[in-house]
Length: 78
Image (cartoon, rainbow, N blue to C red; front, side):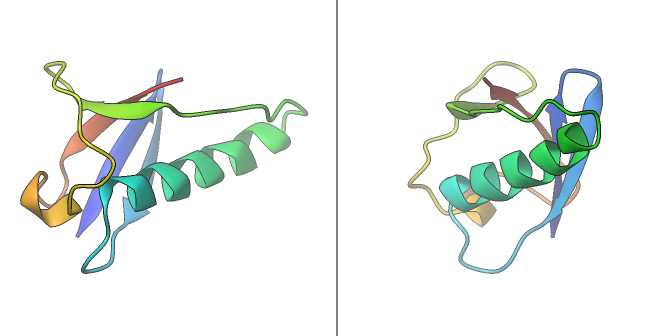
């Protein structure tokens, strides 16, 4: 399964492993986004939580596959 995490206009695709929690997705997406920003010289990013596109907040302790499906899109709150 892969999930797209949209940081503003920039989407980061994260391949997710079985058993991952929302917290794992947050860590991987933030790490990948930082890599992109490092190329531009600015890399301070802290993600507090992620939300569905309609605004529902995902609990960091929940199992990812219980909440999202393959190719879903979520947005972080920085």
